[in-house]
Amino acid sequence: MVRRRDVSQVLIAARGSSDNAATYAKYLFGMANGLPVALAAPSMYTLYGSAPRLRDTLVIGVSQSGMSPDIVAVLDDARQQGMLTVAVTNDESSRLARASERVIGLLAGEERSVAATKTYSAELMVLAMLSTALAQDVACWDQLASLPDAVEATLTLAEEIQSRAERYRYIDACAVIGRGYNYATSFEAALKIKELTYTSANPYSSADFLHGPIAVVGNGYPVLLCAPRGAVSDDMRAMAETVRERGGELLAISDDEALLSLAHTAIWLPQSVDEWLSPMTTIVPAQLLAGFLAECKGLDPQQPRGLKKVTETR
Image (cartoon, rainbow, N blue to C red; front, side, top):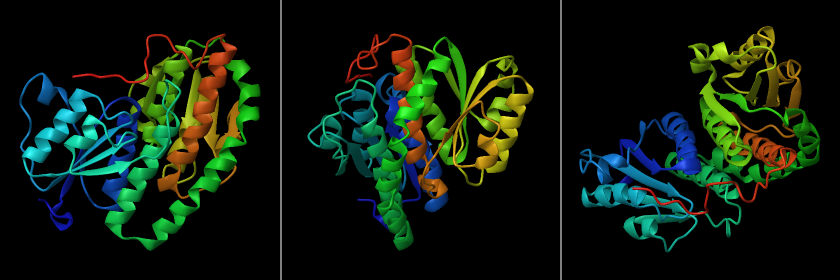
């Protein structure tokens, strides 16, 4: 068995919202634990039959249901190669759990909505806890302990966001931008907007957006910035200014007063947290916005078309 001190890299297998949680882990394990992180390409295992050779690798499977065969295949192969395998799942009796040496349950209760919300938040929390355990950082445990209060405070924004969603009832496309830890937030926010409102919501880092996609921004084009305060603040404020200069419709989720002052729709995060934890508060207003926007469009957010609760891919 690979011992903790032998782990020199991390490989994460996931799909959908769980893949966005894995993107958060890429930044987290890289910065907090000094470990390079790769996101697995499951089709190499299931369609091409050609798995990469691993060495000193912690392999994590992240899945709400733990049922998708392609994610299970990655963990199966890693275990056969003698790597340390961990399943992060809401079903501790699932195929993924059985394939893994260790299981971390999300303990989120039944996810009744088709578009995963609370299980995504639980995945972020578990990955943050795993990183903190590896780092053996007492101060980080204290910060994690205060996070539920910050999330609860953020939920109080529901009524405000509901009243603002009507402004965007007729949009059919938008860009969603984040950077650093909240690069993952931009992808998850865009996914929820796509799933629930059928809007072509495209996620980018602020850096990538400047390399071409910014050409779409013109008069009234909606751009949502997921931009809590942190190391990327100057960059995100510059992006906000650029969107305004180009005539875009700027929405912002932030606790940065200077950035929010530039937004047409400013969503103030009521309780600031350290940047490494901010994806867990920043995603909440985006989830609420997606749900209320669906209702404004006359859609049922509990029954998005073409989707089902458990998706199995190979």
